[in-house]
Image (cartoon, rainbow, N blue to C red; front, side, top):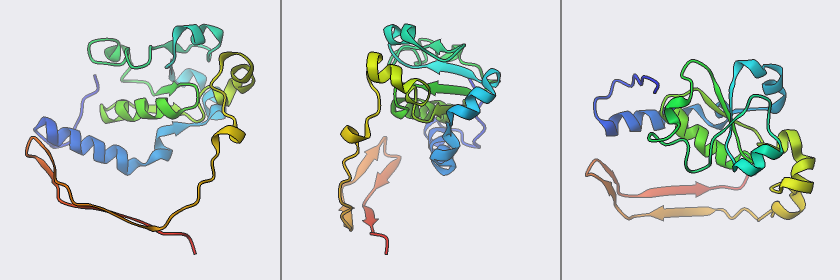
Length: 175
């Protein structure tokens, strides 16, 4: 596993520091586009994070298949990931692999999600065979933005270390 240098000494402190670091980096630091990946393919350890049956129907050259929700736990294949090479994960659309890459970044891995997942390199095959193809006509809802405030007053505690007395979210429409 990667070595974490946060200056913290408790598990909670280390986790909080790592989550804050990943959040501060933002989403753009955690993804890679298909053209850059293809251009520098040998630089990355590529993880295909989807069922074995779909992996056999098509995947990026050199991609290693890890079973979703199973393989990347500490008791399974997590320690098989390299700590000296950037990791690119992909799923069908990039949504699930974005969560997994964020999890790996919190753990100290240099991990990225492939923007748009397999849809970025084999959309037609997914549309006609594998499934899970992105279809804007079905998936873009264009809901109206509702401006306002949301206030949560409940206390949330975790081992008496974290207490949130209130949370205020303000959504404003662009002028």
